[in-house]
Length: 99
Image 1 (cartoon, rainbow, N blue to C red):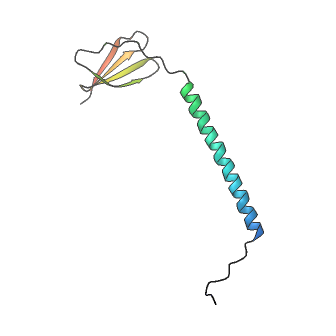
Image 2: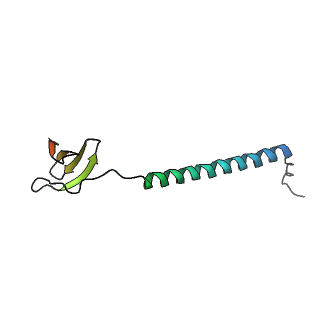
Image 3: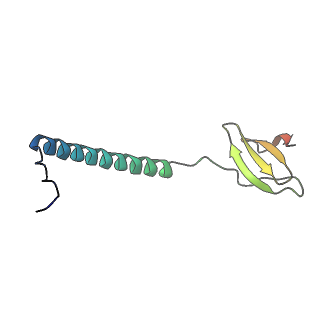
């Protein structure tokens, strides 16, 4: 004699529900992966913003970061300054010292 309980019969309705649930979740995951891949492809193939060909930094300054807006671009230097340049002319507009 065994002390293990008899296995309970599985309800057919529950089994169909679980099968449907797994199928729907699989479909949702496939659609999600396709959307993520589509967004990555469209974002990486989009035209990047135009960068200046050459930027004249003050003597001894080395660029550590770069960012840009619609009408300007900024360079953070190793001597704790932010240099703001005009996008059209490329001329230095403002210098901000970081303390």
